[in-house]
Length: 372
Image (cartoon, rainbow, N blue to C red):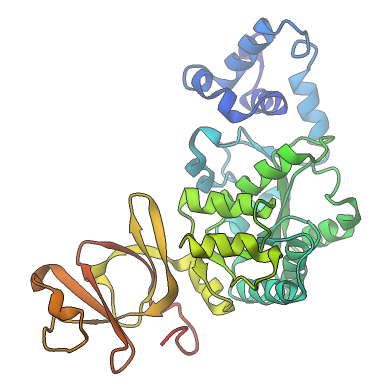
């Protein structure tokens, strides 16, 4: 098929049906999607691509859902952070709702067979996020994810479902009513995969990565290390999305949380208020930290190095006579900011003024301080 007769949307849908974005990076940097499709068809010895009818296949699939591409207004701009792995397009049910939902998306995910405590936490986190105006984003999977969708619905708020299969069905199949509920409650569902595509290990992993990339923050309620939910958590680390891991309980089912917390790769907190504040996190100079700001992590070239416990900052001027045992070691008062915790000070952390910290400004915090 000549490239000029094929629309960008049909070409992207055809390419997405047969290739991952990473396989096409070099070609798409030089050619249009339609030209890439034509080149691939020409070089395909199997005949599989030449027998595929992009326009007809797109038209048939769009009877069920829409195919949204990067040039569309609805396209989630956060996906650009995936670089060469940015999807060629997304299959969406509830297309008109997508901009509103993705602008405040927060992923809540975890085990498919969670502990009772984890289910309670998932419900509390999702409820707090939904009530605060964030879009709870999860899969329809058993356990933590479906609990998060249900909690958002109970709060009267829409949620966003990311599926590892075509949108002509649910995964798992038993959660078809839950999918209808998400869509009926003002939410949306999206997928990397065209109708008729079944779930597999590869689609589950790719969908977890997509879910993290869409979100302003990721909440890992409970995860067995190397479980599917860990792909979302690890993507959050890679993309420098704020990541909260609820405290590990000692149960093997929270071994993923334990590894992330021990490695200082995630905020450690069971508090739903911190989940609500997390999407507001930003990077700031230590010298610009204000009284009452919540300190989450030190930020370096490798990303965020989360503190064992987030704490409220009380910046104080350099004072060698404070007696805390830390300030006295500072020899360049003009270059150092001391962030103290407690009144009187329980501890002092010296930071060069230009060092970067991940903080939540005091104003979004609600009720009493999270840590004092």
